[in-house]
Amino acid sequence: AVRPDGEEVALKLHKLGRSFRTLRNNRDYTRPGQAFNWLYMSRLSALKEFAFMSALHEKGFSVPTPIDVNRHCVVMSLAHGYQLNSIQVLRHPSTVFNS
Image 1 (cartoon, rainbow, N blue to C red):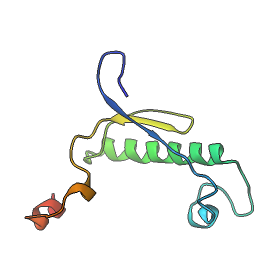
Image 2 (cartoon, one colour):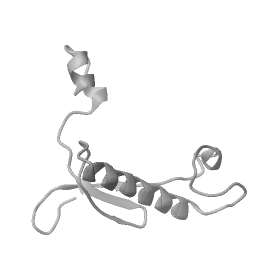
Image 3 (cartoon, helix red, strand yellow):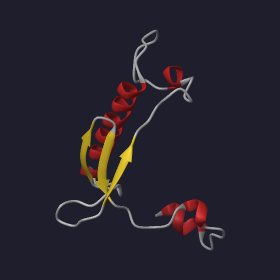
Image 4 (cartoon, rainbow, N blue to C red):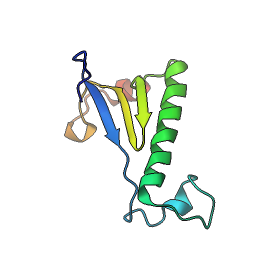
């Protein structure tokens, strides 16, 4: 996405739906036995990600800068780099994993 000032940002949309049949068992978004629609669950997921990202960013970890969260969308700074699945050979794995 592009902000009004021209800065490019990443917009991440959370969508937890029917394909996540074991979601309630594996995540702590709700208490056992509670049922909610996908948009509400996706909103909780986005809020949780934003909170963790904000905490890590404040402590100096190398994470995208969290900008805002609204409904099931998280806006963060754009992380420049390569997708790991596009890298076929890793010449110095210890350097990558230790940095």
